[in-house]
Image 1 (tube, rainbow, N blue to C red):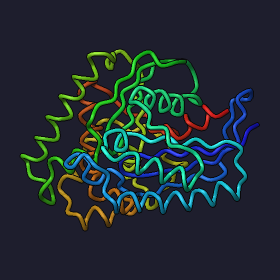
Image 2 (cartoon, rainbow, N blue to C red):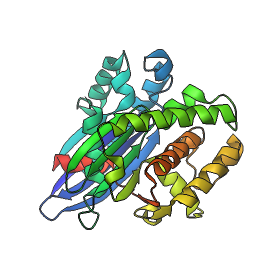
Image 3 (cartoon, helix red, strand yellow):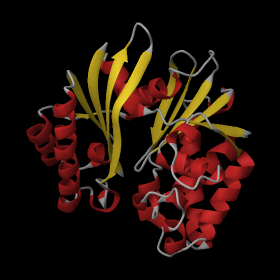
Image 4 (cartoon, rainbow, N blue to C red):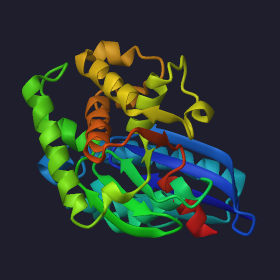
Amino acid sequence: MTRVAAIDCGTNSIRLLVADVDPDAGTLVDLDRRMTIVRLGQGVDRTGRLAPEALERTFAACREYAAAIGELGAEKVRFVATSASRDAENREDFVRGVLDILGVEPEVITGDQEAEFSFTGATRELEGTDRYLVVDIGGGSTEFVVGSAHVEAARSVDIGCVRLTERHVRHDPPGEDEVAAIRADVRAAIALAEETVPVREAHTLVGLAGSVTTVAAIALGLEEYDSAAIHRSRIPYGQVAEVTDRLLAMTHEERAAIPVMHPGRVDVIVSGALVLREIMEHIDAPEVVVSEHDILDGIAWSLA
């Protein structure tokens, strides 16, 4: 058994998992799992650069994570950075800051690597050898991965919930033209993914990340966020569509009042829900299997 620390820094959030991993037994036991909304990708789609205040929010979270890693005595640490830091002109400022705080250099991975980690984390503990389509809806990008025991095909496309919100949303609730623009971007991105990933040939849709888990929590009628209730839940398409329609009609204050809504998702959940609904419509998926295990767990497995 190996004690490892995995950090996933995305466009909207940074997350830590400290776990004991036993690859022979196929077990991963959480010791500390946490998430902080840092909005590292703030304005990147418009400026091409990481904003100073976004970097400082991210570095503050890194300092907290460094303390937790030290207290738990993780033997190996891996820091993976995804969409926003891939795209930014000043990503070296980000790399230097993380290295100073955590003592490891962030790996700015490709979309294909991101997809591989997400698939491993989401499916390793699922029973059977089904053919899965794993969809990881992030802040800056969405990954489409098809495979069974291993990845067969993967594609990362630029339709994350933060990116789409910053690109198209100017009103609250968003107007019909803004919703139409988001849906058009999502459809174009799905078509791009479908050039290399046979999304219609998978038997089971598995959805990952905060947009999906939040939609699931609302659909389940939870009064507080409950990872155990959400993990492996099966949400029918009709409920996903109904929740999306409700969110589209809500104001910022109404979305913020939803008991399971993380404050950092209030502004971007509408775009995230639209991405999920469009994907399910496109592949005619009757339901989505929701996983709380994702790229973070895949990173932890890679360390063992």
